[in-house]
Figure (cartoon, rainbow, N blue to C red):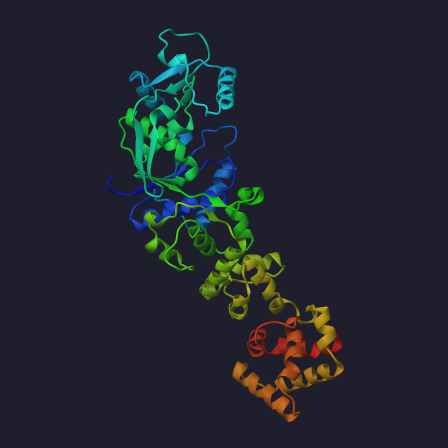
Length: 460
């Protein structure tokens, strides 16, 4: 297989959580770094748990992350005939056998093995039986009893498993409906997958699948088993990518952070998506697990908010402004200017939207921080704000330079310093004692709103 072809194969039984998203991302990064193809397969053979809603949620989450598949989606449930054909091939080769053991018999054998301090490996007389029985059965794969299964894992190194330690796994039920370790081989071969990149929790499945590849005379792909993500509480494990999107993370920030959970490139922390693709290499993925750190995740997202192109950031934040009750067009000039004054102070788009609210609220509806109001809205301060408002009416061209000159003339004439009016002015304009620079705030608010807010403070 000369062309790199990788796949992400989620089961549509829930949302795309961080672990699955990281697996999808690493597959995508490797494919694009190698000039290959990124494929998507929906493993929807679990009819009871698979839903169209979950399928849509997974695909939507991947689109938001920018993980676009290169070929048509393969739905596993539509390939039943191919699975049965492969099963018949194994039956004809005598590579599988009917196992009549009941669940009770298997449980008894498992309990005995555990009591003796060993691990349970299914072995029974069914493998060598020659007589057919009119009893329920499953199809088990005849795992070689001698030798070893060896493969060179790109991340974990050389993995050696004694064949005697691998059970004769069930590949299909009596009706021929396939189980995971069998059908994944058939479908990976159908999609001509060259590299299987998945979590380390699948590592014990790989020797079993390699033997099935060989039994079906199929080419065996390369494997790369990724370290798991530690620090995922039950709540975080069940949280889908969409929950991070709704919390105000940029796709670029999320991709950057989860790419660093198990992979590194020197000491570099912040990457654009194109940079990650350019620098990504499976051979530099760590064997050890990475730990989820939500504070670090916020910090990374903050860097992406600071670095994002202004129009893109404005487009992203309008949804969150709507949640705060403000309908603003993404190309609104005031929004574009407002974003530039507040982006450095926000870790998420939720925080950015809340910080921007004061720009869009009606001048007479601005709410003031009560403690700041008691501290800064003294009678003397309010008198100065009224004077500033009157002085600013003379500014014709509303720019930072002209506003600064006007206010400096005003405070100079009264033998004041900027600090004497800065905090009361900011409170009158923003509603809080902290905020962006005075001149840039006034420019974004505009002349009418600036004068109105400085004047309205007196009436509070």
